[in-house]
Length: 434
Image (cartoon, rainbow, N blue to C red; front, side, top):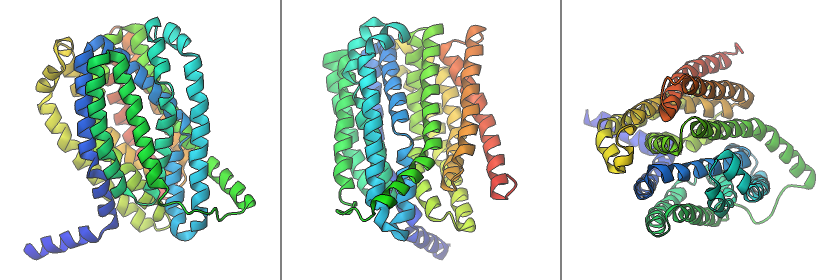
């Protein structure tokens, strides 16, 4: 038994995938814990209604930022993972293109959000008093998009140890900023903390990226142009997937506002925080998965082995925190304060259950990307997201469930169906049946 354990331990230590996974998680755990604690304090200080306003603005910012990244985070990871050994001359070109396109797109969208903040607040949010808060953090979009591209670049270099260190610093700052600024400045303080933390994250990532990028651009203009076309061709369906997800997330919030109120948005935002905690480890591993799948996309046996191991890891790392949080949910709800007490319990329970199916689905999403089947994934996600919105809308107009409950029930049903379908289609693609 002892020799078997020693052999297993040695195998794990020698596994590059295991090492990268460890560093992707180490430090991120502390960072996420600090961020969550800060978010709970913000929710408690603001109360359900104002926290709903904060959640609406934050959701809008995230949706715009996700669209502006144009899928370039994952694109950077895949292209650098494939090129660092096979064609290292392309590395600087990949970095320039991914960060440059992200900067331009996010800059345009941030300016538009700033200019049309009054329309967004008056017409879409139906809350004219939010015009200043929206303008205050509109340029958060730029730093978020750049951070996404930078994380993609660092992941392609397997720089997960460096990112763990950075995320630890960012998590500490996020907690400190959130508590102090929200306490003194309420909603505006919470939003300023969000912006300051993102700027700090972007700066640290930028300094780290510079350590890996060669000083000279080693490709000619013709090769650079060809690389640009290749990157845009790969990124377009990925960008459409992320844009679709962002749009769906935003539309569901707007549905809650139109058919209920900011209190329901606050309830959903609180439940979503804990779902994000459960999906934290699988989420951190997504770039690790894509890096290793891309490096081995010509080796079917190893590619399949990585997928199987990752599904098992995702399942374990999702189910364990799910059980813990589910059993402690009554205590968790109480910590948020009286305004959340009556409804958050069962909304949280359903939202948590959905994470198990989402976690496994994400493995297949990375697998599709690693073998350049992004259009398949876009079609599947488009169908999924349309059905989630439709289901939420039908529940709301027929008064079957309350606002937040309608959304989490619809999401659970569709996520279960989505997982079954994506597994079936991927297996058929792998066997050459599609």
